[in-house]
Amino acid sequence: MAAVVTLRVARPTDDIEALLPFYREGLGFDVLYRFTNHNGFDGIMLGSKGAPYHFEFTKAHGHVAGQAPTQDNLLIFYLPAVEEWQAAVDRMEAAGVPAVPAFNAYWDKQGRTFEDPDGYRVVIQNAAWKG
Image (tube, rainbow, N blue to C red; front, side, top):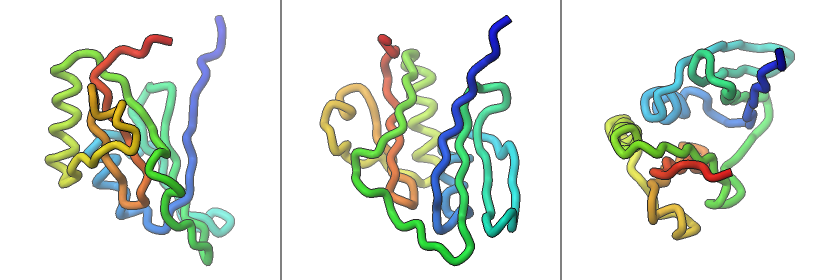
């Protein structure tokens, strides 16, 4: 039996707590793990139990992470069922996260783009991935 590949997307932030409404309430992720002062870092891992991916946000003590370098730094979730897509968009808006115009207008045709407090963007795309 082949091992399941798990993807971790990790990035720094200056304020872990400010990200929680976006990723927990908006995207519906669970807190999978949290740590404080591990070799000068605090961190949190968010995702869905059993999913083959999760997000890690870390804050290095005494270091400024800053904002996203561009508006085209994207994570994209493909949700082909319109009901599931609309529920995801509604959840973001209920969390107080309004959609923003995409830097690349392509993403506005079948999706909505949302920006987290660090300026990084997530697209919720109403389409199937054709890889």
